[in-house]
Image 1 (cartoon, rainbow, N blue to C red):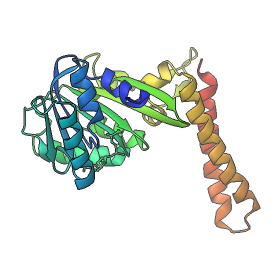
Image 2 (image 1 turned 30 degrees about the horizontal axis):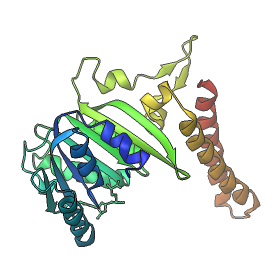
Image 3 (image 1 turned 60 degrees about the vertical axis):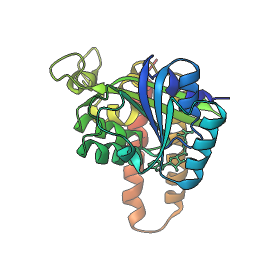
Length: 251
Ligand code: SAM
């Protein structure tokens, strides 16, 4: 059974896609995408031998060997340019996902790709920054809580500069009625522009959790007699205030 996390990634694949799932492990996503008719063809990419074998076995057991190609290799190396129109990468850190996309892009592997559906476990801000710097714009962000963990799914398409579909438009500072900055660009990148527009319980839970982690660090710094503790305390207090101020403005 597909987890709610992977189901959310599945939802983001355009119907009728040819897509590549990088770091596919047991190929759960490609198998579900073919079964549900979301995809007509899929590539399951895996760099490690154990998960690669597991993917080969799962695809064979599902009888989908003709429509799912299981390939062993690092990141987007397993793709020929133009072979797929959607790429999913789920269950890794944001910096690893960004590095996989970056190395692939240099080799033209993002050619013809019109949707990226990405599910970073941590480091979402690093991934948002990579998308901004590399001509991709978020069209959706989702956040959910499952088994006590919080996951974000970022969906991006190629940016059209000067249009509604541009990062300039998406990351406009959120202003209060009196023109004061409610949430600056940096916090938009950290927290997610779409998530901030319609924050749900999982979003609030993530950032309240972040504040409690910072408060725990602050409490231990208050007990510390090290000279450097004072400087760290100031930084952490400012960070708590920054997050709290944004949360207070939200519905
Ligand atoms: N995508 C699945 C999911 O979300 O449930 C599996 C996630 S699992 C935690 C991460 C997988 O990515 C592992 O199977 C690992 O072998 C694979 N992986 C890590 N780095 C990779 C890379 N550079 N290229 C391809 N696969 C990679």
